[in-house]
Length: 274
Image (cartoon, rainbow, N blue to C red; front, top):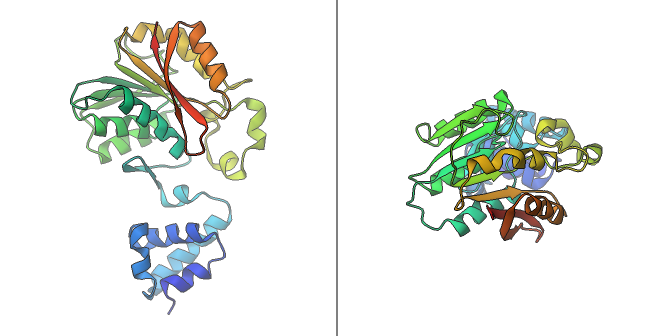
């Protein structure tokens, strides 16, 4: 028989990865794992763990193996059709909470490029009286987002629309618009980590020649969907903050605030129409 701790140490993969896989096998939280170190795995548990370790050695990300990724205050279903939630994107949630402090108000929220739905769902869980629309060009991504909405009890407060940005969205005013669009310049895609290149959908990564194509497309129509009190929060890549700000200023928007990620890099901006 093999103990939990022995199996982790003998796995020959990164220790934290092995711990996450063991928690998945045992259906426990990472914080509870130390209490299980001396537990002897059953044959079935040990076989499942070793099988997952072999998959991890192929480069498959942990969240794709387990089908789940934690973000903000919830866990979200993920697969190869959506970009797995990153801690950097939590700056969008932080920015909205900073500028919309009354959590009891009813806001109409739009999430452009919703992917797994993690951003919109996280906001709707914070703002209990609000409603939202998640937009994505990928029907496969929307299927995952709908599953996550159902899992979080938000079916009645959220709609999903397949659309190329604003193209299929009925004209209306949104109090909050958020977006984490593709922002990696096409020429940089080949330099990404192997895990990203192999397992993240390129549709969620490729931002065109300079990485800003999606922001330009969004700005073409966004003025039709906001009023003077609306806020817009966008995420962007490393060292793109000045180019993003110039683009928004040229289109008549005022920068309200900037948010730094855990690496102290400017990761998101909040705007309103001038």
